[in-house]
Length: 259
Image (cartoon, rainbow, N blue to C red; front, side, top):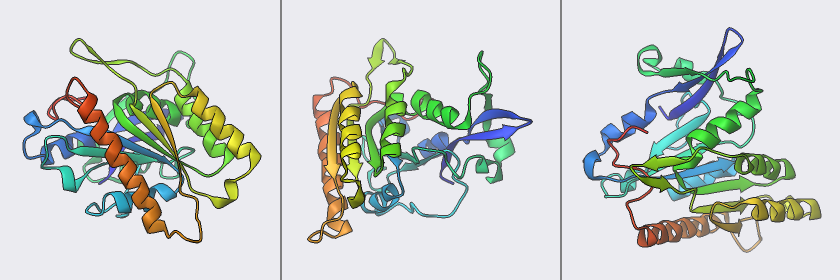
């Protein structure tokens, strides 16, 4: 089971579903009271899954199961370290698997359900998805990796990052916004003026840390494997820098703490 958060429509109303995935992964850690996970979030087009298979070869990323709105995994390779990596992934736009968490085993006993109707009434599905990602995932994210290959992709990313999101605290300390945003370009047909302009505009709007644009668009001299290895190297350097320059433990509290 990889589904973490989901939106399910019942009786014309939307509910946010927490599948208990995070707690399940925490229970798999060997010493959660002394481990400090970091969260990486991968969002965007289908190329993110190809990259994840290279970045996390010991995880079964493509296993068929109900996916919901956002999936969450524990990096098998880092599970026994002091700083294990949790990585979430989702699309940027309307999620096709929305609502299918109801088919997960033990969904009636393990899942938590929250009404998402606000003072303004129920928001459109696209906006609801954006708000769930922004308010529940981004505040905990150390590195946000966006896979973009079209103008609509960049516009969706802009909407995700522009609107205000909640501020988190661990004790007396404010949890900072994502340390680094990596924009991954993947489509060779996107080398058009409008795409370049939108990408530059997105980079200007992001005020949450370092922004890196990684161009993985196909070239005759490169195969997909080495291209994704460049992303792997960049993520590795980013994680190491975060740990080296942080005055506290990584973004999350000890893994046994509920978030």
